[in-house]
Length: 118
Image (cartoon, rainbow, N blue to C red; front, side, top):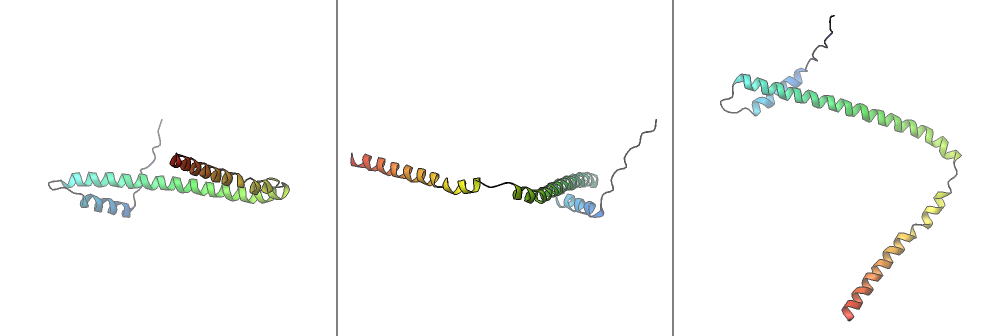
């Protein structure tokens, strides 16, 4: 049985050059050319992994964008058919948090006044 191996993906010359430049920039005194080459290969591998991750993120973002656009295209037809009784209820309930805030500050001021007066 012959197994088909996927060929190694070719690395772009720009990636190779960038990896070599980074490896030479971090080269230590007494480091051999072979060690520098191995470091460059490691950097190159890291760059390739980063590019793969970015492609995955870009595909996921595109997919999410398409789903959002599809949902927006469907949503306007649903908005027309559904009544909005909740829209009138929202402004009338917005006074409650403000009333509680004012009551709490009055309570703090009254407590402070009582402590100071005693």
